[in-house]
Image 1: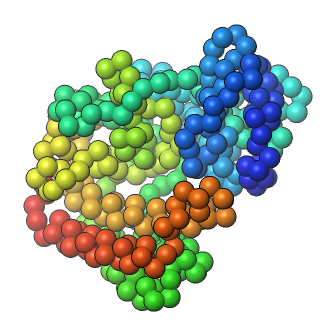
Image 2: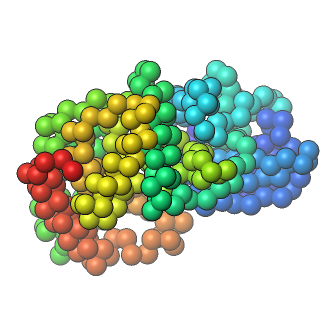
Length: 338
């Protein structure tokens, strides 16, 4: 894995030098794109083209995990699932290291990066049933490829271990304020127990997933959904790629999920028992989001953009939301699947 240099030395000149090291010569025009986790740049090339270069956060993923993500994207593209795969790289300088077969990951001056074609688009309109069906078909096709084999190196969703690790990071790191800690810790412990119970009851099959399939990560282009980033690709239950696309009360979510599944089940089977995992997955995401902020707190970007994190008011709000999730998970366990 690359040395944990951080991003302090990642200047526009170094970005251009990195691209030059794999034979992609920029013309000097660079636009930094929105990304908290990595550093992502749109770079205009001397040949008139444009690419997007992603510089990976040091220490987050191993080379093997990144290359496996890239391999999944290439496999999806070969199956004509609309994704934006990484470009195949070639060494254009003696100090660049290439990784993967074929090579899609490069290391230059201690920074690991990949390059993809630029692909513009917008968020999908989820209030349109036809759009939901199309997205369902898209995810169904993605999952049909994802079921071919498991990930060997990427993260495997493990509710007990993932929840316990997130909780420990927040408590051991002293991020939870003293007055709010007892109530938050007690509520979090109860919530994670219900998460574990739900997964034990359903015992879902797992497959290779997008992993973070919320509306902002689905690009609508030329009347169809696309995926431009598989940075959170993981092994987990199918519903992980569906639940973040539904919202509202129980009735509204049921209608939206059924519409998604109208398209999804044209390409992949769906185990209806996984509907019970929606609220547990929402609970786990809430907790892991707090842990993600805590783990990145030494990066100046995070205190600047998330000033509310770590305050007494933040933890009081988190406790309230976890209590609401306790009720939602209990209701889901007691009721028939929607």
